[in-house]
Image (cartoon, rainbow, N blue to C red; front, side, top):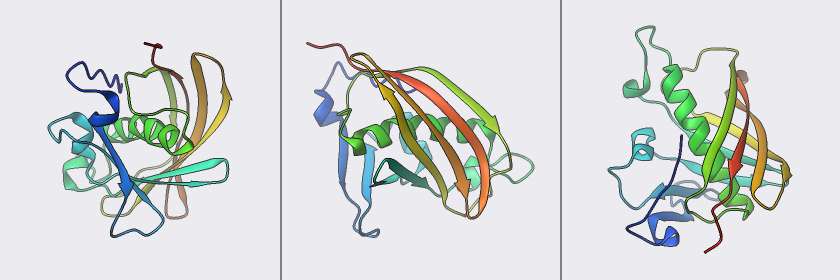
Length: 157
């Protein structure tokens, strides 16, 4: 899970969150250090629409399984990363050492390589230390998975 521990850099310096030049209205969300896991996902973009954050990536061959669908591990990794990108877009988390406490996922269909995959994330509740989220992973008109999770906010100081 995304444990974003950045002892070597300030959290605000570890991530980039800026307008994507090829996708007007979308933000580009990524680590400055492209040797981290997140870079395996490729371009991750995010956009907030009211109470919903839309986070996208386009799966490539490297994300596929032997059935030529998107590997379940790649889907789970993307969902986990999408939670953090979504929370950043909502302004409830700046980049930092927040952690995924749990991530519940039900696969409903297969993801296809080469077509944009979108995590649609909403916040259910927020406390001083926890954020409860849920969402759908969709591709075109098909639901690939539904998910819910809990994120622990960074400790103060």
